[in-house]
Image (cartoon, rainbow, N blue to C red):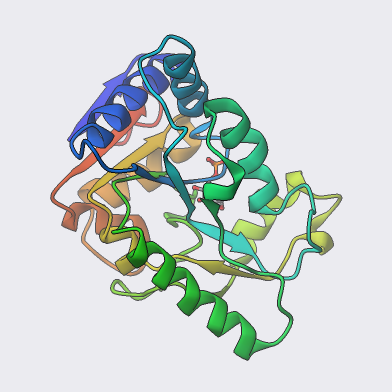
Length: 245
Ligand code: GLP
């Protein structure tokens, strides 16, 4: 389902409704919300916070599951995704930091990172899977940090970041040299395991990636094209991001 709204604010409001409706389908169970970083879902998180303030939502018993994390940043680094999600989501929607799971990218050796990836998959499974996964899309069509070429059935694992993504994310660091080269990310197969996927994209910089993902072939060259494969995907766009459709 593709929902096009006039502007980013309206897109965020609509996406929040879609998220809340998805979570409401499993009453009596602690909701499991999949969280994306990046600028795209920020308005959606604000809208979810507004719903909490107005008594229309409650995340005090919810679990938050991050999509991905950088490898090699010092613990507590402000741009590490645990810190980002604490600031941009937990504080905003009232999600307990104890219930926020983020892949552990602090290890420096490969065996420990592989173990962290396995542990993350086990954690998601122990929670009974993700109810609603919020997603942004990279300008190169990446989902989480599944860069072009990612296997369509992949699970959580260590990945090298593409130069395009490192350049795109350099604005959060003091310079390109400080952007990590690797990450831990849920795989495309992991993401497809969520019961509902909600992608948010706004602005003309995402128009080509959105068009390729939604109307192009299902291909590892455009990781977000796996959305076509999921039976309950809702794509929330503003008119600029929908311009290529
Ligand atoms: C990062 C994140 C992705 C996110 C992407 C787009 O690379 N790992 O999950 O979708 O950025 O970010 P933005 O929404 O700021 O364009």
